[in-house]
Amino acid sequence: MKYLLWISFLFIGESHGYVRLTNLKCESYDNTFVVFPECRLKVLGRGIIGANMHIKFLKLPINRMVLRFTTYRKLTGYHPFLFNVSDELCRALKYPNRHRVVYYFYTAFMPFSNINHTCPYNDDVYIRNCTLDDRMFAKVPLPKGIYKLTLEMDDGVMNWASIINIYFEIDID
Image (cartoon, rainbow, N blue to C red):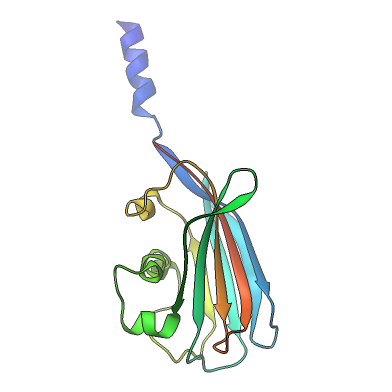
């Protein structure tokens, strides 16, 4: 009987997996367009890691910006996985569409950022204590593994100005 009680205590505290950030890198190719005063991960609690970014745009106002989202999965190095899409940010914010990848990422990061209106943008962009949650991956279930999400920003004249690499690990049952 005491073994049955012991086994039931083991399953009460059982974890069903995790999704966590492992690294964050921000790089500017055009320092006259965008700089990153802050780009780091911060431990918020036991096993909780949050991303903090400060994106400072130097050529204001921003009336047009193209974003490219690319995911990679680590196997023997990082290989392209699932999607590689580009979209115009101002149009995507003005006409949100649930069937686009940009909308999916925007809704995931919106509670942690100050991106809450359409263009023109005259402010810096802040992302504070952004944590990943397994509910974020309910619509796009990914297999267990290590992933890299790249977010490339274009200044509007097809000049890739910066790249943000977000590394994360998924281990969900």
